[in-house]
Image (tube, rainbow, N blue to C red):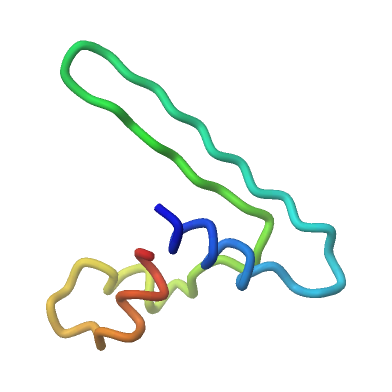
Length: 65
């Protein structure tokens, strides 16, 4: 969880005021945590590969926290 917030901070350009939102919802079976920010986001190329096993570990860590 800490890495998600850390990655959000690193993804925000220095000329923007940082905006990070954390939303937590729960029901009787699950808890969902959504983290969003006003950073640059993940490129389309990497977004398509996030869950592929061939993604380099350092990029996987950056993308997923």
